[in-house]
Length: 197
Image 1 (cartoon, one colour):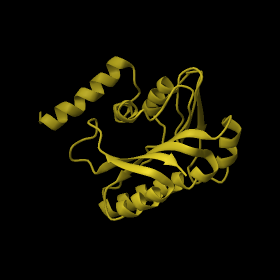
Image 2: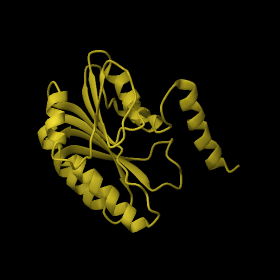
Image 3: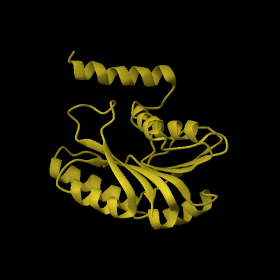
Image 4: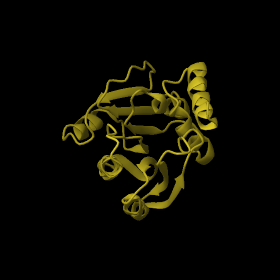
């Protein structure tokens, strides 16, 4: 077994042992710890929430006084009292109505781990993933409070600079990060964004 595969298995094993729905939980967990991205009492929206690893991490960080709203095409099976799940396409015109009903106020944190069904044609996969990220970002004006934070997954490629520039206009600071739980050869990067304007 290659070292990279062994490391990947390590996070999968850890997720099983610690009760997380997926190894992706550790990508968010690292950034929550590093940047204090989610605080107790926060309202969080998680786009691309299935199977629920990020929801679990956000739920723990926000605590009993917080709320985490997960959005995904797939149903998410979690019974935490501070988690609400919305089954919807990110581009559905009805999503805004559903979010308004679910949220007590504007969110403190936006999370997006959105990914298309990967086809294996890199340019196409990259473009489709960036389109999903842009769709999530387009909801910030209505649902993220001024001063709020965000974390977006992006596939590195031709449109990465465009995405980073767009977010840099809306946040005071945008940090590029690749969590340890991401595979070394993976093109996924994360943009951690602070202080929404």
